[in-house]
Length: 252
Image 1 (cartoon, rainbow, N blue to C red):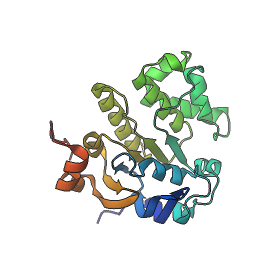
Image 2: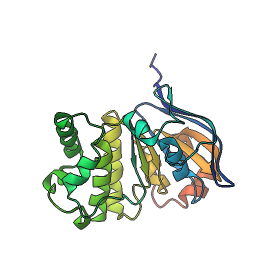
Image 3: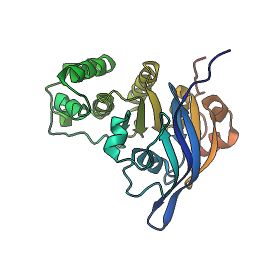
Image 4: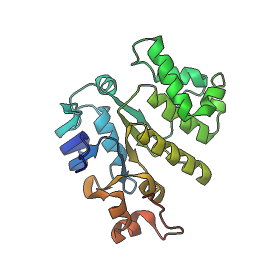
């Protein structure tokens, strides 16, 4: 019998508030180790708020509920401790340091590494994912294309050697051919043992690479299941995927 994957991240009845507005309502979910889980939903559904709540960047939040990572509660930890525990984050819009070189941006992401040897090993791993970054280590990050900047942002997050990678809208603003490249890279990252929790508007492409999917609506979790189940869900297709121009191609 196949062994069930271990739960890496668990949220139990999480509530997050923005002032007097409840942004997340009674959200409970699990993320299995070694998986890609995609969070779907319209703008304002609470997707980015969910990632920020996990990362601990919203002061005093979650207001209620528990978040556990590797079996340890993190919902009252400082963000730095959460990052050091093995969670990295790629924000929407990339937010690279445009005036710094590619290498300097990557070093910013390696601040949890203990020594130069660990940093060097992390850099070698990132360059295996992104050979272009190795070629352009001395180039100012602001001169990279949008797709290259997204690769840099993901590479910077991987410099921490995370077990869980949070990605917020990685395909935003990219040409279709670059979107495919980014999702290919996300699949490779998962295959190398890094669990991925992904917020994405491009539901079709995300579900094509994901193992599991979640749907948020007005801060509530309204659907969850395998990616293939969500692909076959007529309501999810109508709300978040629109009329299909091409069938979703999921590898068996």
